[in-house]
Amino acid sequence: MPTFWHGLLLGSVLLSWVYWITVAIAVAIFFTRKARPAPESYRPSVSLIKPVCGLEKDLYTNLSSACAQDYPDYEVIYALQNPEDSVLPILERIRAENPPNRVRILIDPTAAGPNGRLCNILNATRKAKGDVLVYSDSDMLLAPDYLRAITAPLADPAVGVSCTLYRAHGAVNVWESLELLSLNAEFVPSMIFATVTGAALACPGASQAVRRETLEKIGGLAPMADSLVEDLELGRRIVGEGLQVVIGPHVAATGVDLGSWRPWWRHQVYWDQNTRAASPVGFFFTCLVRGVPLVVLYSCALLPHGIFKLELLLATLALRLISAASSCLYLGDAEGLRTLWLLPLRDLTGAATWAASFLQREVHWKGRVFVLSGNRLVESV
Image 1 (cartoon, rainbow, N blue to C red):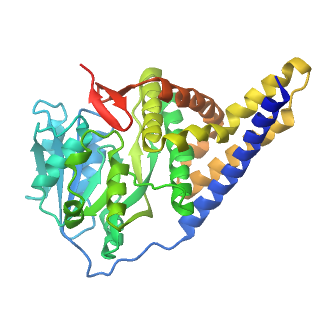
Image 2 (cartoon, rainbow, N blue to C red):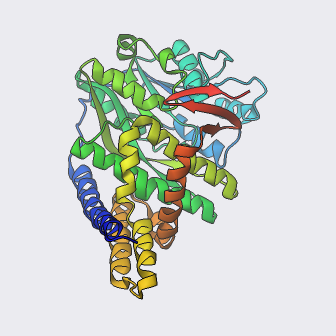
Image 3 (cartoon, rainbow, N blue to C red):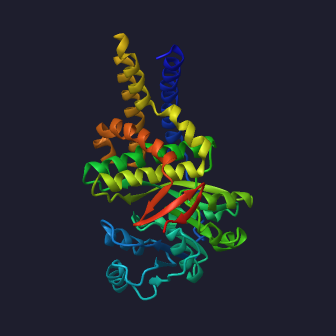
């Protein structure tokens, strides 16, 4: 291999070191900052909207946690499109277990576009009663203080949307453990890095709160119904109105439900397709901070010359694991700490899914297949 490529690979490995150290510092800064307290008088009425589609692992536990909030005035709306969805008995059980008027089940097949999750949220928003709309995915396990935490930043009129972090939990096989590490040791720390440094806008859609008047100001959710990354599109429109996106330090929990390698692979590619659609140039250059596959490639490239940079390989792995462990500690992720030995494998496969996200135009979601054009979804026939 020419000297130029040796130098490029070595430089990228060292750049990865700098990136991991910077991410660890950003995570520490984020979690040591004090959250903005809301006045006790600020308790707007809330509609907590849970988009639902099909059965998932631990679904009853996750969905019912929405009804156990330490909050004075809120309703929970479970939104779905299919009147024959197998999740309905679970929703009926949750409704029966809660006070009257606390839980609503909304079945509405109206589709403003191909993004099913967004359409569920949009349909429920139109029927919601609350002054603040909270969107929380069906696989989120919510602590009792969740609503207080996510609505608190909205007490500041300059804040347009409030989000919380989340960490994966409940992995029971190797595929779910790899997924957990992708979220807790890669995606969430990089999102915190972007937020702390201002390198990019982050507006995580799995856990968002927005005022009704803010939605009206940006023209509602319907224009985003054909977007793959609709959460970031929401954030961009809100910032365009001169309002802020705030991510608080509260950490919700999200489940992982992957029974074999095929759904795991599809979901990893789906994650990378989301990131690429959100920031094509930035995502492309993440190839320069994928230190584990880069150091392996660098070491293998030198093998014909009888040189194996074992010290560089071990130093890269150690720094990667230490940085990831720091993030897991701040996220309260004991599972991630126990499975960190899988992180080098996750990083190696991450390079493969990165490449696949450029080559594969199909997007798989809940059994449906779409064709991706930029950030726009078109359902495949």
